[in-house]
Length: 459
Image (cartoon, rainbow, N blue to C red; front, side):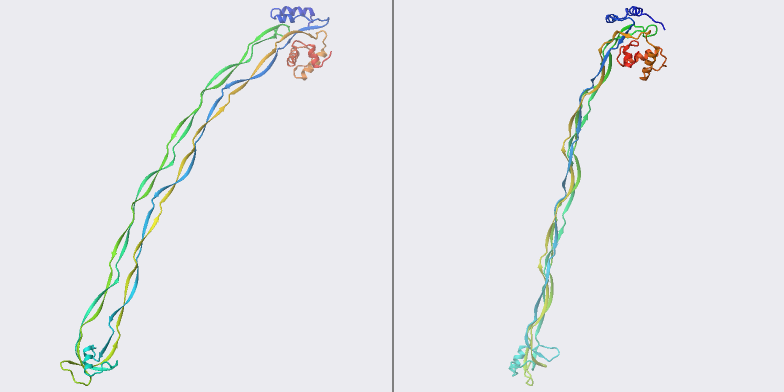
């Protein structure tokens, strides 16, 4: 390992840096008020940066159209399917039987003959018998007299009577109907809203992330970066391309007319009402026979045991005075008690329930605001530029191997050094010292007293 004097190191550094350092670097190259035995080297104080984030618009605010569908309700309506009508029914006539006594033979006092043919006794015979001295008036029933007679003349008559009165019979002619088709509304017409979506465009925009800056960097000399030459380097600005979507045409709606819905049903309608026709039923008659006298017999009487009347035929029988009551016959006939009639029964109309859909609330459009979308972009800005200053370093002549070993051990514990603890300042040791300085914000450039102090190493 070569050892150089301080004056030689300074001279070489000034000559090497004269072509690449700025005015700031020249001013900073002034050697501090060094004391004999002290060593100095140029150290780079890195630039300080601050990082902050900004919101960058990537999608403009827009609005979304939300269609609230129409609300429907239903109600039940009664539709006439069969008209009201009238049904007629017949109440038949009622009849009653009437019994009536008809005199078919008059009451009479008569004389009954003893003849087998029962020839009646005439008044003339009785008068003749009375005139002939027979006690006709005083004759008691059961007493007999003898008679002579000329026969009486009779005729038979047939009488007609009403056995059942005539009446009217009612006949119902049914009503006539026909079926017709009718259209019934089951759903009202309404309007339906349909969404027309928004149209978007995609645009790109460059956003500044880190502005252009200048900083000092060590220059490599003979393959190493420990020659003390510093270069001022311009780092260009950094940009980030951001893609965002913008609204070209906003969303809208269009209206579609939905027609009404009808249903065809059959309805029975009255063409001709029911009617009643009267059919006459004739009366019923019957006959009975009645015997009537045409002429009285001519009688002449003689008291039994008296002389026979001249010109008359003797009957050859005696008669007894009898009293015979009148004869009656009971006839039954049917008469109308209550005439036939009709009864009307109202048949109500027939309705069919049909469900009808109606619009309770029409469809509407609700606009929903869609907020703008932003991305977080991180920007890095330089707070203070890098500087090259002289910092006191440990002279090679005064640093011991034990100090280097302690330095290596400390850096190894912190994860910066990975080589052997050999007490030699090699490339691994220098790289570890440089990494430690950068991470802890210390001036970068050799083994400075600040590094030793920070690691707690005393010489």
